[in-house]
Amino acid sequence: MAFNASVLPKKAVSGEDPPIKKIVDESGPLCSCVIGVFDPATKTSHNYVFDKQMYDMRCDTLKQVIFWRNIMNMHEDSCIINVATHRNELMRMESKRWSTLSDEQKTCFKDSVRMALNLDSTHRILLTTEKKYFYDFDRAFGQFEKGINCFIENDVDPWYAQSILLIESPNKLQKSNAGAYGPFQLMKNVARLFGLTVNRKMDERANFERSAYAASSLLKKVCIPKTREMLDSLGISDYNETDLWFRLLVMHSYHAGSGNVRQALKTFNPTVGDMNLIYNLWKAETRHFKSASQNYSQLVLAAHLEMNERLKPQIDYLSKQNLKSLDSLQAYTRSN
Image 1 (cartoon, rainbow, N blue to C red):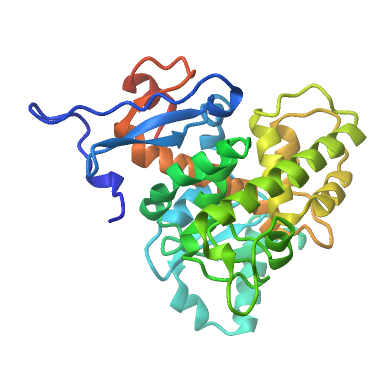
Image 2 (cartoon, helix red, strand yellow):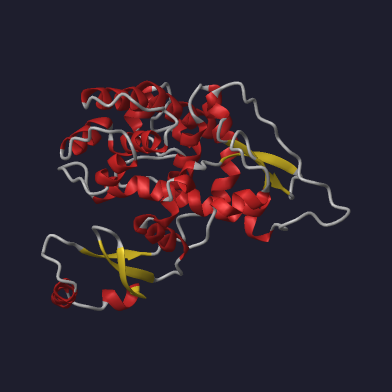
């Protein structure tokens, strides 16, 4: 049965079993963000990654992130008319209503919006449909424990496991248009590279543990080393690999491929490693790095923040975050 955070009590009722704290091994940096979240259905705690950096850097206030959080929560057949550059929301409407317009009417509408806002033709006016059906946070939560443990076992930061599962796993194992499949959305060649069987009779990308091994190996042996190489080539050396911006950059490599991310970085040649590098990447465009690639880390941030909001009352242990109580956590998880 899926874990439904929305129905959990905000505090223990007298006579109920108290939250069971799961104390993870804190001997290394891999567990620095791992906390325990209580599930009353099983009366156990589950490993969960809570990244305080997202609040320290006020990522929850960014227009792009707020936009995607809205998309993740909108009702079926809804859409937002928005300016692509900063995801400024212009209006909401029913998707069916937009579909009844002719191409000429849609073009005239977008032109009138640009004129009213004094925007030139380079500013794209987009219609983005709701994605609540896709982002099944209860289902994703049920996979975090296995994913986190699999990544730690392979000596890979579990932050990546949770991030990928939040973004990719809710698709219920559907194949992407590009052919990616499984809970970690692996391409055939990547899966085979790390020893998975993919043929007409068997596709181990559907096996969670095998898929997690391949995904963590891809990060460990390709994405993270290539990200280091990219930064070295730009003369950026002062960073920690647990920095939020570094992790997000690695996620871009996981999604778009390190070669395409490298080309995107060349469009603005950053000299400092910080969140501004990521924000500029959201605007960078090359032949193989376009809207879906720009949006990827925005979706990662939005999904993490949405999951934090859902689990806020149930977090019973914070590892190395210097947050002494639930009140401290709630101070960080500001509502929009």
